[in-house]
Length: 387
Image 1 (cartoon, one colour):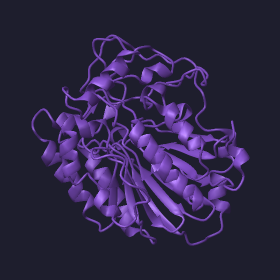
Image 2 (spheres, helix red, strand yellow):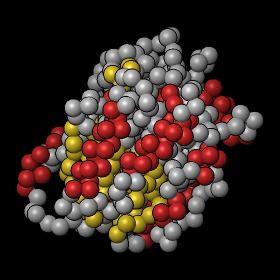
Image 3 (cartoon, one colour):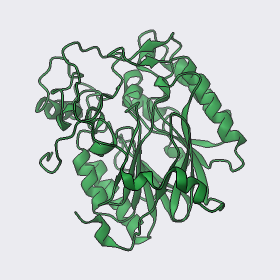
Image 4 (cartoon, helix red, strand yellow):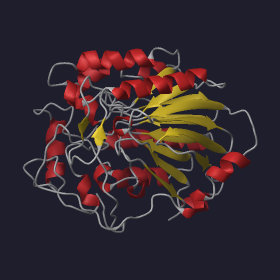
């Protein structure tokens, strides 16, 4: 994995989920803060929300991340600096569902960006019960839900169990896949909700210590990889206090060559059809859209694939409960990291509704999530993607 192409990146402290994963040996002291929202985007946010003509969107969809429900009293994150609202996260999901159901234009689908229940459910054997509770809330509306898998899915269930569960959304895509599945146990697929638009769901823990049997070759390969950078006894402790190497922890993962090759083929097909593609993953892949400790292990390899195609317009992720945003002008891609429901107070919320037009996506945020206008850059100009 190449590191030399990226400048040293440090951000403000991000509250990642370590509640199950205590580590007392390291503090993340991040001194220099790089702005996550560039001036170019600021000029196109609130003012653009008012200036945009009142058109009917081609379609809309909802988005929500890191619900992490558990039938537990409120707690705190690993560093005890941010409160976790385990029970009330279900109420915030219910409010989001009510909002989507009452919208004048109903969403075509919902993107659930991972960590649907908290890992604390595993200990008392409450994983199935907690998942059923959350899925009942989603099923209160007929709108289909596309589920992304995060680290908490793997704290609660094995990979094989997830593939057999209702968190496997691939049955929703019958007839709309734009490419073959990347592998029998890789949870990645694409679907097209409207002509000219494709969404790709990625498996950010395809290469990981989570969800893999310890006797498997995949586990051994992931362990070899992480041990190149992280020598801590507890692999949930970042190997360093700063820099991009923080990402090599057990609560992160990466994308296998099979999955990357499959993504490349899906994007090639989208390029040929001049489609607009939104990629979704639990883990962010751009260093300026998140704290480095939340990045996918091989984010650079995935960014290189995005760079080689003209069709990608947006990359959406969760995992970083503080959220983040970066417009990569060289690639014309909006990298949007959604704030987490789990650390959202009961009197607020954290979900969005996205209206899609020919030339933009308009995010209407609720609570901690701000409004944004994500303009599509010209696809016919290959120069804007050159580095």
